[in-house]
Image (cartoon, rainbow over all chains, first blue to last red; front, top):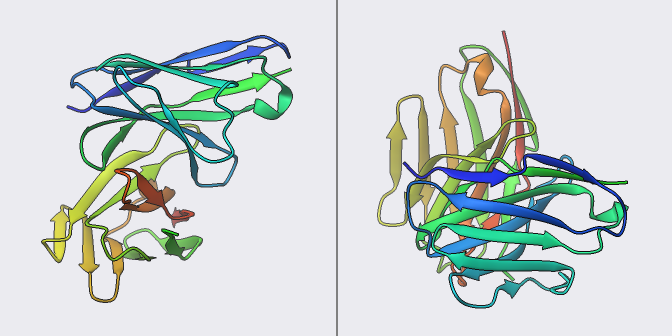
Length: 114
Length: 111
């Protein structure tokens, strides 16, 4: 149990366009979902925390108008990178939690902005 | 603020040897300590976790020990195999229900 999927696994887009990434908990209901960004050879950087039906809480320095998070149900959260630019290119990973602190991660989405 | 230090940053062992990765945390209120394995291009996989009401937990070749007094916890992998090669991250449960991650250890197991 505790399987989390992400879609797409990779995406290439042009500068200025928006990209949506989906995160789903497949076999459990997630009270909280998290979105991370990871640069090569670095640790995970938490971007935001979201609970179903409420607004996401963003970490300091993360632009909420650029990285839109929607947590529509207990099994689905989406991250939309708006007006993407090359510096937004990164590996984005979501995680889902069904009890305090325990997080199960998705496989990640590689975003490349040309 | 909350912080997790992880050592070493790289570790190379021969197949069959043991590997130990150590972490220290700053928030004495932390009570949950997971370890994740991340292979190249994939998301982190939870391999073992421990809560502060126990001092040690074992799952086949993997064990985690926790010393709450010293605020240390360690991952032990015995009889290492080439497929154990990956980046391992420790984490500590934060006050906001989040996880504070260490910087990772790249483990290489040489056949």
